[in-house]
Image (cartoon, rainbow, N blue to C red):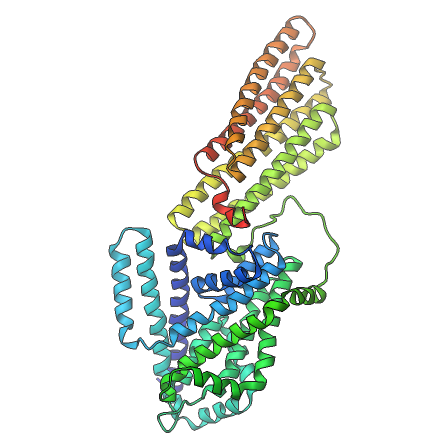
Length: 563
């Protein structure tokens, strides 16, 4: 094979192994972390310093600042996080992403296959999910370094190429050119961790003297700055079609990294000298990988320290650049919280699903209130509204179920998360039933109006009373699920008994009125259909209460909101 082609395929093959290993390690670390991931997410809403810490920790687990930034954008778009909170997360994410470069700087070439073999054995032999995930993390860790080793071996011939060394000399002498190269590299690969790994590997190649780096730290730093700018494109792409605050969050990420590059590019040589001073000493080719990692870390820590006091200014700046537009009324058929960009982070995705389920529950509550209004007033506009909401709710249910299907098919859920999610789907089915029964009851009222049926005042009073009790039961059920309110559960059981007693009384009274000729017997079927709907609604409310009693409440998913 031609040497040039061999180098190209070797470089991209090694890069592919590296990215695959990094993504696999991220997925397995998330599964191994389990509930700890939720605890880290719980820091997100406290204050700006804890937000920075949470952003750094989450990024250390996800091994990707882009993933953390996309998650923050999803939360802001869903209204689960304020813009200042999201920006503090992004500050921390820029620090957390430097962990990858620090890990790469360790020379573990001799132990690559030990990690791969040990990880494979642990994941193959052990049955416990968490231990298997730890094994797969070790396996992925080995793959990550195997990719680095592959890239390093194919790059060695480049060090002796006069054409290539001439090109590198130009990049090293012109910092702006280095920034552009780093930006383009990351735009193509869509991972600053990967491009920084390539940079570390390439800079570790010896020049003609066999001791100094082919690139040098002063030549590597501008490329490093460009890598930081290039990684912001992922966030910008993720914000397309999202809310104004989501776009502002992505813009803040770009401003943070661009401002750092603009500041540091004027001090490349002094900064390189400082990094060399605080880094291990030795032959340049042996220590430059660590120097690049340290330069990356110090850059992001410095910029975070500089920007934290001016967080309010950053918020005002992005709000000025992306001003508020005309407010539009939310479409009940469209999800308020779901964001497919967050699917790869199950702890975050489940939080969005739980919020969307509660939103769906509120739509059903509105329908229930409108149905009671139609029975009381026979308002045809309210009847049409219930139908419209029924259509919207069916669409919303479909969106949630599709999202859950995508989440399950991703394979990123732990066993506990999968179990709790299945219970969440059970809740969703009862909420859907409440909406369907509301539409069915509205259709029966419409039939009553079309055919001129007339119920007695006693019958209408009892129907309204039953619906009032159902509305209370349903509200208590939602409160029990959202807040784990034990008192609400007892109220549901009590209201169910009252509805049952009232149902028996209404059936008996109706048949007595038919017997006495006060009501036409043709009214019996539609009247009993309404009672049947009320009875089934009561059963659904009890089902929701029982789910809450069996330790499924939404605090498992959304406790991070500061509750």
